[in-house]
Amino acid sequence: MALIPATILTGFLGSGKTTLLKRVLSEAHGQKIAVVENEFGEENIDNEILVADTTENIIQMSNGCICCTIRDDLRATLQDLAQKKRKGELDFDRVVIETTGLADPGPVAQTFFMDDEVAEQYLLDSILTLVDAKHAAQQLNDRQEARRQVGFADQIFISKADLVEPAEVDALIHRLKHMNPRAPIRPVHFGEVSLSEVFDLRGFNLNAKLEIDPDFLKADGHDHHDHDHHDHGHEHHDHEHGEHCNHPSHQHGHSHGHHHHHDDDVKSFVYRATRPFSPEKLEDFLGAIVQVYGPRMLRYKGVLHMEGTERKVIFQGVHQLMGSDLGPVWAEGEPRMSKLVFIGIDLPRDILEQGLEQSLV
Picture (cartoon, helix red, strand yellow):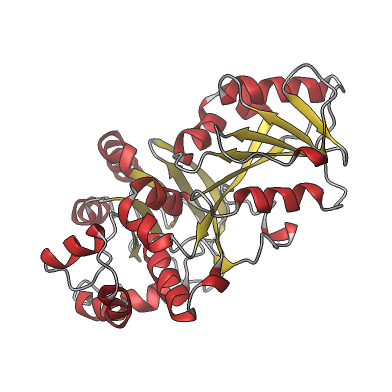
C-alpha cells in the first residue's frame, strides 16, 4: 500500500494555524485529510464542520475529513489511523499534525524515521511554520522554541503581514532568511494559501537540489572576511525597532556590543568545496559531530562531490538522525562541487568548517 504523506504544521501561538487548517479542511479539494491535533487548551477546529458520530476521539467531518485529538502519544495515534485505513474503516489520503504553539517539531519529525511501524506506513512530507508578523519580533527575541520552529521549517508562511508596516515585514523576512535559508518564505492572508503550497513539498526527500535562498548567499558573500558587510545589512532595520521598544530582549542586544540587533541563536551557514570528500573521513566526522551537537542541529542537507563515485551523494538530517543516498550522475561539464547547509542553535561554525575541510581528499 502506498505510504501516507504527513505534514507537520507548527507555528507561534495566534499565528493562524487553526485558520489555515480550517481553510484546508473545508475547501472542497477532493482530498480527504486526517488532522491530528496535538493541542491542549487552545482553540480547536470549529464544531459546526464536525460530525461527531463516534465514541472514540476520531471525528468524521461533513466533507469526509477526519479530526483526531491525541490522547496518548503520536506514535499510537498514527498507527491507529493507519490500521483503520487499511481495514477500510477510515478513508483519508494524508495526515496533517498540528503541534502546540510552543512545541519543538524535532521529536515529531523524528517519530517518522525512528519508529519502524510509522516509517513503514507514512512518508513525512514537510514541516510548515506559521509566523505571526505582528508579534514575530518579540516572540523570536524571547522564545527559543519560536526560533527552533523557524529553523526546522521547509516552508514558512507569514500571517498578519497586513497589520504591520511593509518595512517591518521586510526586516522580518531578512531575519528569517538568516535563520533558515532553505525554506521559501511568503506572506499569506487569513490562511489563504493554495494547497499546492501546503502539500507534497517533499521537504524531506533526498533530492539532488539544495535550494538555498539566493539573496542569502549574496548577502553573506560567504567569504570569511565578509562579516562587516553582512552586519550592515541589518543596520537600517535597527532604528525602527530600537526607539519605541523597551523590551528586555532588545536591551541586552545592544549592551553586548553586537553590530546588529538580532544575533539569533538559530543560525545557518553554507559550506562549499570543489575538492572531493573522502567517504570514510566524512562519515567519521559527521558521525562524531552529531554525537556531540545533534540536539542543537535542527536541519542540515548536502549535495556532495565524493571520491570514488560519478554520482552526486545527497545527505540530510534532523538532530542526530542522518540519511544519505546516491543521486544522479554529475552532468557533462557540470562543475563538481559540494554544497552543504547547516541550520542549528549556536553551532560551532569553525569546528564544522575545519572538520569538513579535513574530510576532503
